[in-house]
Length: 110
Ligand SMILES: [Zn+2]
Image (cartoon, rainbow, N blue to C red; front, top):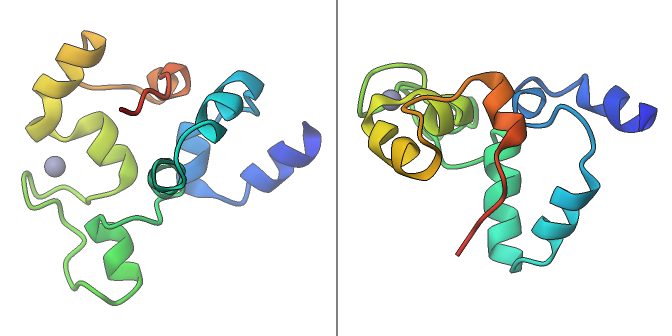
């Protein structure tokens, strides 16, 4: 556990999604397909096809969200972007998520 927390300290975006090691969530995730595991890992680490990461990788020039103009990070995409407020409301009963909400989200991928 201490080793996990020490590693997590190095990763800014991952810290928003992972507060600690969750054995149950890890088991849930590892039972999914390789594609879905990669999707969740990409969102969790910020290494995904969102403009913030694409800009860091020099694939895109603008890190902004095409929907609202804020920086398009994983946190913005999952928790804040007004474009997806209705989806969040339908799934979790909230139009935006706090950092604390993220730690409590379950991994449900169909
Ligand atoms: Zn947005």
